[in-house]
Amino acid sequence: MKKNSNVLSIMLLLCMTLFISVGCDKEDPEPEVKGETLDLGDGSKENFEIKSDMTLKWPNTYNLKGFVYVPGGVTLTIEPGVIIKGEKSTQGTLIVERGGKLIAQGSKERPIVFTSAQAPGSRKPGDWGGIILLGKAPNNMGEQTIEGGVRSNHGGKEANDNSGILSYVRVEFAGIEYSPDNEINGVTFGSVGAGTQVDHVQVSYSGDDSFEWFGGSMNAKYLVAFRGWDDDFDTDNGFSGKIQFAFALRDPEVGDKSASNSFESDNNANASNGEPFTSAVFANVSLFGPVSDPNNYVEKASIHGSTSGGPRFQAGLHLRRNTQLSIFNSLIAAFPIGLIIENDKNSSTQTWATEGKLNVANCIIANAVKNFQDAQYWTNNTQFNPAENSGAFADSYFNRSGGGNRSYSTISDLKLSGNPLNLSSPVVFPNSDSPLTTGAAWTNTKVSSGFEKVSYIGAFAPTETASNNWTTGWTNFDPQNTVY
Image 1: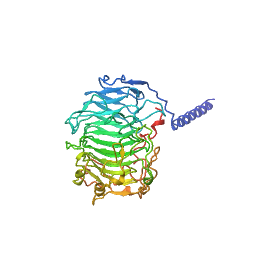
Image 2: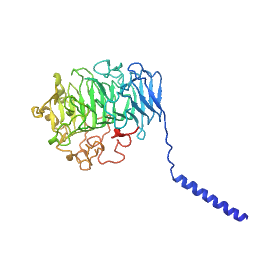
Image 3: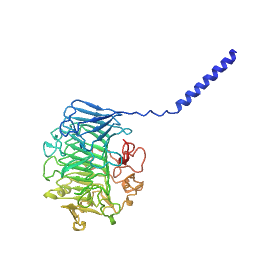
Image 4: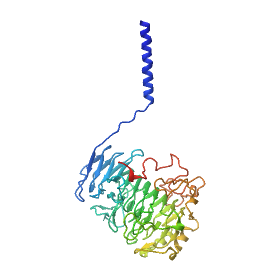
């Protein structure tokens, strides 16, 4: 009997061991974590301030109601994975004032998402205000009030001012035009200093510009502007930062009534010689516009309700009003005009290009209706005939000896691994035989430091792999139908 008992004990031990082993090999599904839905703001435009340091905690969802101010001396921290929904009726907007900080440090697996409070399928550009980040760095207009109807000023003398962290963040359906030249963009940077960390930020379906800088000296990497309304990257008032790895894709049915560009750059609205000059340096940018066939391009009717007949797309790069911006090792594809260098308002923009203070170098223009122009394509509700402007200066400048620039007639000439104009799933990676795989240069003093020295043109390394696709995991190219 004792012998049989020992056998039974051994058999039970073997069964328990087998059960534990199988249980360890199989991952149990994580339980669904549900948080609360909380309000951030009271719906007013002037009165709501975060009075002391606050943390928005995951897995809660927050309704952004009205203008929410983070004043000087206060830090707002947002945990990875938090969802913030901008309320449409009160134009929810987050404003981080000078001396305040926003610590929005998401992750690849759990990005922080600012989006519309409207239901899936009903979201539109301009459903809420956006993010406004303000600092104490220099600009060329002195202390000034930021656009968009908010109370807050920006500007100072602290080039290394720190406004916090914006990392692995999506901003969807923001951007409101209150009046001409008075807008809240998807993300607005006013005199933001170099102590601020900005990387891995996607702005989608903005009702105005996706990203706009008014002065400041901040740097950034890995930016995405997707299906925005007006400009993708707008630089003004002496912005002098360094930006590397940026990607923009336009929707041919979504554009501004006053001419949308991918890059629009001014020294300031008056084209003055105010210092510091707008001298930002961009490298490894890929810009894809609305033109699928440059030989049969017709601008489509607007879905935004433009009263003047539809979206007005203009240029990949519109450089004007005394800007000294530089762009290196980049791709400008599928725009009505590839490059405009304009001496509007009696500015010296073309002189700065000749003197090497403005630079477009080691870049590729492809699939443009017209590669070059020296004046604005759209003005006073009248579309210029491209044939009326030869673009002689921009042409001679782009094709100058030693500039390293090239142009191609079609998208197929770029030899990408798929269709980069596919709005639901853009494929942007060069094949091994693509002209984008080589040609980058880093000898110009403007890009000799502060940049990752890669050999390729544009924002993406040749041939997609898990390690070189920096958009994987945290971006979303279908926010309209995402259930948050």
